[in-house]
Amino acid sequence: MDKVTRCHWCNSSELYQEYHDTEWGKPVHNDQKLFEFLALESFQAGLSWITILKKRPHFRAAFDNFDVEKISNYTNEKIETLLRNEGIIRHRGKIEATINNAKCFIEIQKEHGSFGHFIWAFVNHTPQDNQVEEANQIPSQTPLSITISKDLKKRGFKFFGPTTVYAFMQATGMVNDHLNNCSFK
Image (cartoon, helix red, strand yellow):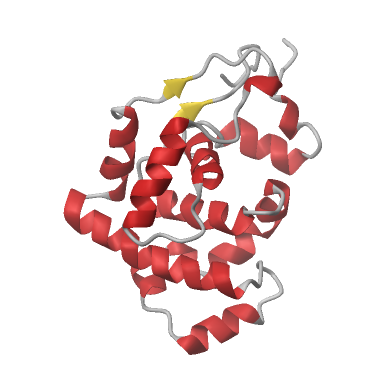
């Protein structure tokens, strides 16, 4: 059997490897899954992605499997319940941003038919393959992630700056930053 080569960042845990091998960089067009990544990437700001991956099942349970309609209608009582949930990141600003972003997400769905159609238009509905030779070539943000972040901010999104947007683009396959020698490129 051939040796499997993975991107540098995922070799520290089996959970990271599973995420890398099955999700990271794979194109996502489903709105519910896109909202899940949008929310999780927002919660990840300032933290490691492995922290979010470990808590992901708890996030799914706490946030109604990322049902954008339900989340857009969360009440103050629900916010207080989430702030007591030790299984998730208990940051009021990020929780409130997730509810706010759900409302903004729905507005984009109404305007464009789907969030997927809207967000993928930024890359002409085709993943950008960045042909990465070395890990240090992977940026934390790009001119495109800055443009998307500004557009989303104008639409009312919160906790979704250029670095978070770029991580979202990587996670949802809008960009392919797998190293060229990665078995999962």
